[in-house]
Amino acid sequence: MTDLNFSEATLEAVSFLSVRKEMKAEPEAIGAAMAEAFGAVWAAREAAGAPAITPPMAAYVSMAEGVATADVGMGVAPDDAAKFSGDGEVRIVELPAGAAIRVIHKGPYAGLGETYKAAFAHVAVSGKTPGFPIRESYLNDPQETPESDWLTQIDIPVS
Image (cartoon, rainbow, N blue to C red; front, side, top):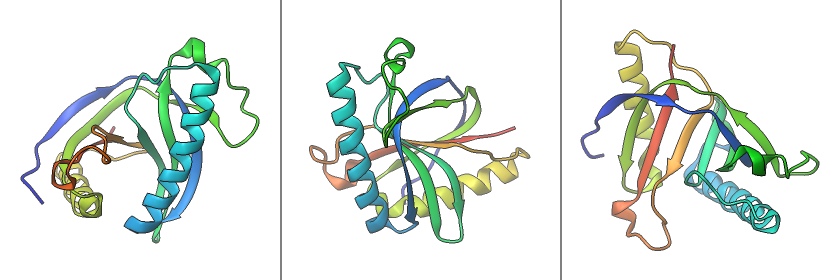
């Protein structure tokens, strides 16, 4: 794990086109679930002519006992969000605005667990209370970027 820099951030509300996935909190299981969800969201977004306004993201709504549940997808403009009825697997979830602690993880996704441990420790030391949904944004394309250079932004809502 490289040196981590934590900062305070203000998250904007986002109309998030997504598929909810419950998965084992293990890199292989998460990777497979993410690939499936991103494929479904990408196809629905393209079919509706709704451009993405955020990088691909996972919004974790729970993490407990080796299982993670996340809405996986990307943000769309509010006008485009109205194109999705909520019927079926792909749906709009409104991610709330608010304060967060932010950290950028550089490197393989398999190392994210250590970054999360450090981030939650930082939140605790800061005297803040962590919340959900935790946003994990994928800032570059893993198909075009060497694994050692992958960038993942983690935003932990705090109060």
